[in-house]
Amino acid sequence: MDKNQIIAKTKTKLIFREDNRVVKEFNMLFSKSNVLNEALNHSMVEESGLNVPKLIDVKLEGDKRSITMEYVQGKTLESMMKKDAKNINQYIDFMVDVEIEMHSKKIEGLKKLKAKYGDKICKSPYDATTRYELFRLLEKLPTHDKLCHGDFNPSNIMVDDSGNYVILDWSHATQGNASADAALTYLQFILNDKRDIAETYIETFCKKSDTAVQYVKKWLPIVAAVTAINFESEEKKAILDGFVKEVFNVNL
Image 1 (cartoon, rainbow, N blue to C red):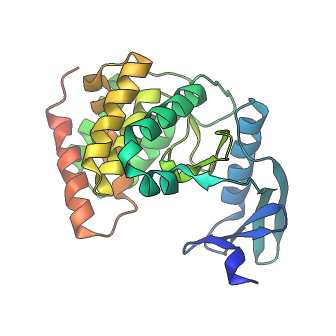
Image 2 (image 1 turned 60 degrees about the horizontal axis):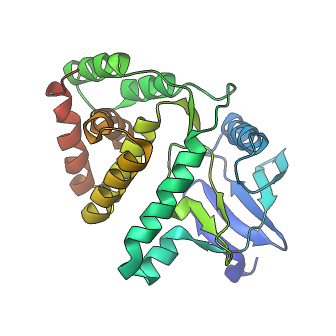
């Protein structure tokens, strides 16, 4: 394979371009059910009318498991923000507009956000007392049915020269509370040492969606606990621990 065709590589998958297609190839650490679930999520979101790459093919043969989608010409919003940092507020504005459009969709077949987060709290590295408080908070927060991405960040938004966008990577999609999705995006900015951008983002999201900042931040202990499952860095883990501990201070 031409190395120039490789788009991204992780411990579980290789993403590469093949002519006018993008192939996401998974290794054996990624189960068949996870591949099928990601493809199903993507197809349901595509059928909602939201701007996403067209799903073309799913293969499950031998040790080759892959999802093939159309190739979309453009740049990630992340790369645009890095190249033109002086206009960061405009990019955040655009990002939030895309997010609000996404949250306007409802897809009944997707897993419920609260159910998914409940499963993950069980697997989180926190003691029983903390998990109990996390479950109590999760139960009390309002249940909605909006389309939530689960990993909404600038690297998952592709923009062409005309300003048209597509949203990538629907492996974590659920139906639930949009403020949980926003809290997770806010947290990701902080974990990537972009505190200023995080604050600009949450203020913009709350203004455009007419949501109280305090309400979005009530989700932070939960999304931090869920995120902690995948972090090995002690520095990042300390940040997550700080947010999780706030579960004892949340007033509902």
